[in-house]
Image (cartoon, rainbow, N blue to C red):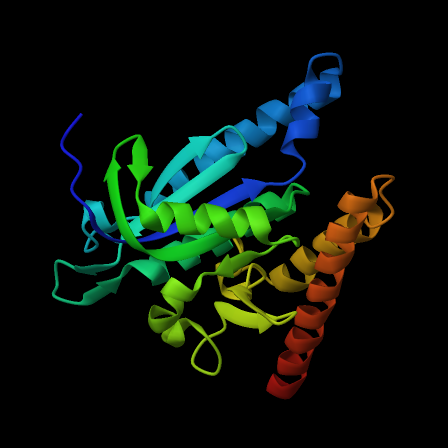
Length: 244
């Protein structure tokens, strides 16, 4: 192990909700075992596939690094960098974008996530990361109740260009500044005709079904998400109508 040397990082800690139940059921249920294998494939492949699409001007050290721990995903990037053509790179932007992309991929399979993003000191090797920024991101995931990725106060000075009215990658909803996990620009197939409407319809069908879950805690999370989805759906419909 190399000596620990802290640098400035943006760090996201994301928990995949419902994963533990799938694991427990997989021992005796073939369908659950198949679901487990699919989720593990999504977690291990999603970020790697996305990273391979990053333009070559972005240095490898700046591409968000994924680390997997059971049902959790850590995404991190140096806070500041410079591309090969001299453009400034912002680590919080990269981490937020990757979180949105991962949320869409997992939502499409019927999974919600919960987590936090913080900015601060961290040290990262290929398969490990540690530091105050990590502790802050994990603390948010442990305290936030709803399926959202909250922005820690340490990231606020760096999030202004991601928030309204400049951008909507971070939004205030339910009195919390959080990642806009439904941002339409980062849909995997966003260039396909009707992609947004189709994706939101799939998400709504899943939310409506799970809002009636026998477990009250699970039902409340999906009910919260259904409200958020309705809010974003109305907003998207308004913009589409204005463009006609």
